Length: 157
Length: 157
Image (tube, rainbow over the protein chains, first blue to last red):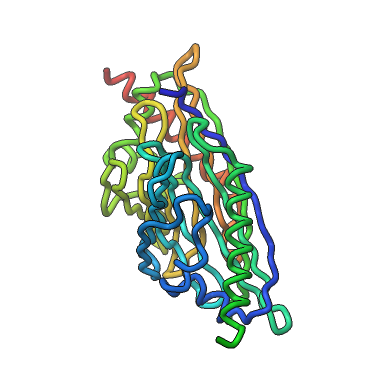
């Protein structure tokens, strides 16, 4: 077993989307929408997803088996303020190893006809299993996908 | 409408106790012990409505002045390594208003004279209700009480 260690970090990502706070918020609150854009890696894709979007409710995601292992995310919603703020805590696991425990805050601010989204993750990385820069990069990919999802949703079918 | 704001901060407090890591860890793992020292102001009282010390278990703590509005914290234990670390995530409310959400890491390491304990609180302070410097002062008082608790145990032994 690796030597026990905890590295505490914090990072923020800010994005602007050409969609109202209501629409951007819905991309997080609606299970079908959330599932469409939230796989953070192409590899393996999203295997299972469960979303119980209410304070105290849980969200769980499990990746499909891949060479690097099976990733699983288990979240609990700490606070939900419709169209304004979502705060959740989550753990990320790879097989039986707990990689990290985090608090994530998503703030939605109206910006003209669009939305300025501010994401802040405060994380404890455990035992050197994962790296903060990988997490930040994965999160950025997720917010790129959200932009694609919102653009597709906007375009007439 | 309430003005929404979030301040993200990390509060770190370190203390060396004249007790083994196992004894300091034990003081964090029993509701009976915790309720003797887990309160941030001299004559405030603390009590646990619920305490289930295992990974996936949780606790519900009330603390406050003998007469007056209490604070309530609800947390879930996400990582427990006996005698090494405890990590939990949750939120705190008072008078029905959520004031913080965060992740708390407590690490126990052997030191020449006993145990070096490091507490790291990664917190989202909500809507200006609480301030990081007050939490730091609160933890210092709590750890003063923990030192008294450990000394009393030592004398009783």
